Image 1 (cartoon, rainbow, N blue to C red):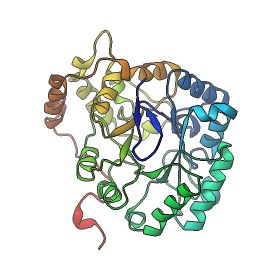
Image 2 (tube, rainbow, N blue to C red):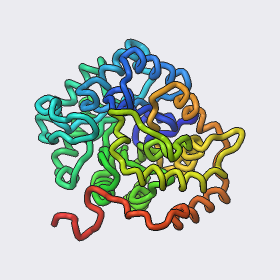
Image 3 (cartoon, rainbow, N blue to C red):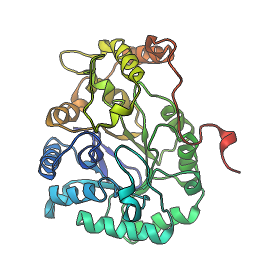
Length: 344
């Protein structure tokens, strides 16, 4: 494992992190607390120290798992990240299956209360990275909200702060304006070898030496692990069952153009992570981990062969040609994707 410093803090981020949404929400299959804790502790043994939770994942469950996995002195060995902003206290039963959003609440009293409750669930006196969860432009422009984050840092309740964008891909100008206006320590967004827009544009236009990016969905919902076929069937309850079949068929075609990245010493899934880690602006990648085989593979990714300039150039050419797939429907984005859509 390799580690990267988080500017303006004394935190070091493992290049591969562990996102707790896969083990706490049920969207990737059912995982018991015992299984989740064992997987998290195994991740730490492999050098993964960044664990990314959210108070709304499992209505507090992801944070409770952190307390179970890393009690006492073990807490000091990990970097705890979590998110606040969804009011699951009032609306937690409204979500249903999948990624249906419940109402946000970014009022200052609610955020303060949410942070205090998160600290209690995690069983800690500080949150290393606090993120506003899936902000909209209204929150980007709410200066008192960002002032509160800095106040919480000065109070010692958090050590750094930022925001997450989502849940779906998009939110271009929400991200750009957050970095330009507020210089957060962290901004989390979706970005991967297959889905490069708007992630690259977001980082290019909002570039700041003071901000690092946490990348989630680095394998394009598993596609870049290279194990799907046209016959793949996802189990009931898995969020991928809601995707159109064209996503699977076109994705498999694209993956075949990327097989040159595989070798005896590097899997496609590891190469997908190395592609991201070639960018120094990225602080850590958060692959979707839901079994030990994946965990071992992804944790080893930073120690595999780095992509060569020729490989990076070949990927860029393939992306410019949509990896050889024709007549694919344009991607659908959420959020503010054009400057003329930004509220005055």
